Amino acid sequence: MRPIDKIVLHTSYTPEGREHDVDDIDAWHKANGWSGVGYHFVVKIDGTVQVGRPLDKIGAHTKGKNQGSIGVCYIGGMNAQDRKPKDTRTEAQKKALIDLCEGLSLTFGGLTVYGHNEFSTKSCPCFDVKAEFRDVKDPKFTMPLMHEDRVSRKPQ
Image (cartoon, rainbow, N blue to C red; front, side, top):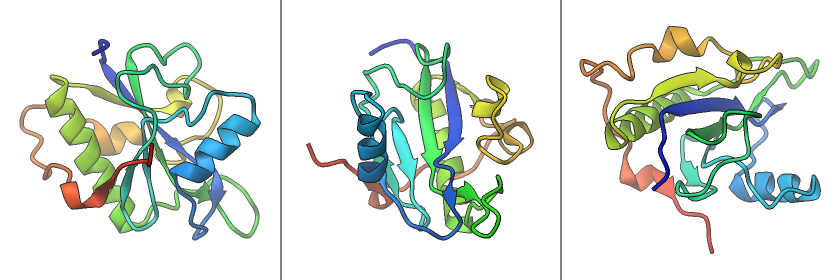
């Protein structure tokens, strides 16, 4: 396994309420000439966590920061009316993101969670990651681990 020290959160920047999944993102990324989905995980509107790029493969999600990171993308991030950035996360997505980040942090021995906007001028992921995820690396962080029944694997 490659060394990993961070999680970078993203949004698909798709209109609020419009469902997409890891296969859609895979197709979009391939249409851009990339090898496939650049995120390791995608969180759907209902909170289902889908596996994208395998964790042992370097992601393609944050320029200059892919080497030691895990890319996580939630579906949404755009106001459906004016197409401007907006935190569109559902309660199920918020819980799934916390569960996933905590589980990954415990698995890999403590990871720092960042928003894509901390490494670029983009608004992605459209919320203040530091305010919500500052304690994930803290051993006192007590949110429940991700639930296996909410994790789906991408068909090979």
